[in-house]
Amino acid sequence: MRCLLVSAAVLMYLTPQAGTSETKIPGEEVSLCEVVKAPSKYSGHRLSIQGIVLGEHKERLILMYPECQFGILLSFSSEVQRQPDVQMLFRAIRRGNPGTTDRDISGRFTGEFSYSEEGSKMILQTDKVDHLKSPKA
Image 1 (cartoon, rainbow, N blue to C red):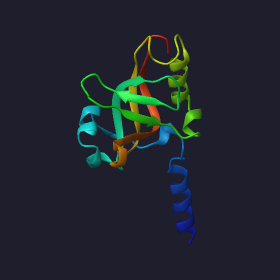
Image 2 (image 1 turned 180 degrees about the vertical axis):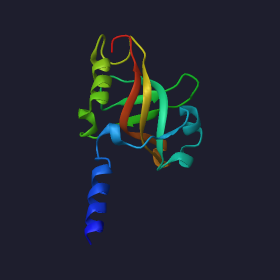
Image 3 (image 1 turned 45 degrees about the vertical axis):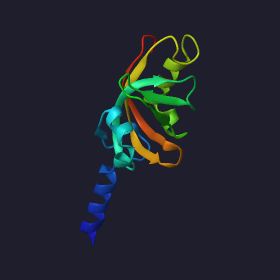
Image 4 (image 1 turned 90 degrees about the horizontal axis):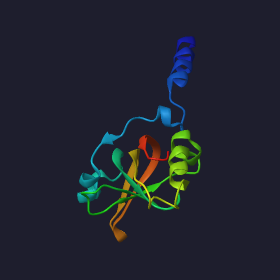
């Protein structure tokens, strides 16, 4: 019984805490174009996607890539919005002219992808942002 309690305590200590980007498992690295060509194939998967952010505020950000015909809506839970990596993205968007009209903001965005055939809605519930590049970030 004592061995079982010690094992449980060690497991709890080693288990990542929910909501922290540093402890999230990596997503499957896939190109944005692959995802938008076959969104149902990736729905429900944890993905890591490189792209350029378009938008004016955090509630309406689209992840695009020049060669792709469509983009993916980036969504952030209120808890994730407080993370330093996501805050850096939001600061880059607020600088200069409103939104991303005067600069390219790019990076790698990781989270769970969902696709709804009704309205062809593609959303990445983002929980990690890295490799962020912006001239004013």
